[in-house]
Length: 332
View (cartoon, rainbow, N blue to C red):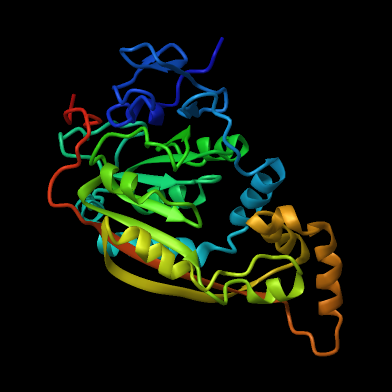
């Protein structure tokens, strides 16, 4: 007997759209189907594939996905997660308006577009969600919100699908039209991930916010010095980011997260293995390099610098986007 569809995925049907035609989707047994009979099967792991065509999009391989999940689960990047949720609390109106009541009431698992009182439920989208670490952290911080995450890596999606009971997860390509209704997202996270500004602004609510996290120049500098082949931060990256976002967004605020992160050999190896550099370097040799550093006369406990730029961006649009991918009425 097949497992039932995850409640969070059922609850997201008011905003999910067919990636081929933009029509609404409904659950038919273990598949999502639109009126044109485009059909998308649910994986046993609890996510649905909403990739167009044959879905042959590359993402993190199994080893990279496992390394990312292990490293993030260690809590080493907890300061970054807290900074992201703090920025969302400060800049996303819907998350402030939907703060939990003193009685502690929260949205129930798998809730759709409105709560029991009929008010709008805030929606958090994580573009390139990986194992769901940041999406899960947002849902923990904002217990009235629901989450949607997508990624191209099947292994990462298996982790993400079980990361939080209020997270609906699907496979998706950030460079294709996002399978989401216009104006349906309140907080859109882009953490160390590619961006599609035109689609991001389309799916964001007019009062929503795009939150972008990207490495600063000194991010992981100690590890890059230790491991030849690790990719350095492109000095033009920030300029290109703002050039891409400026036609669609206004920068609201920017912050820097900077702290020292202690590493042992296992966590350092996972950190290297989860980066884009992993395909070009020998991560297996890293523990030996760390041990050599540890035993040198001038060595101190090995730490790396976590240095990340965070920014919140307000959608810039004078009229609703021209699209038929509209949201379902609330409280249907």
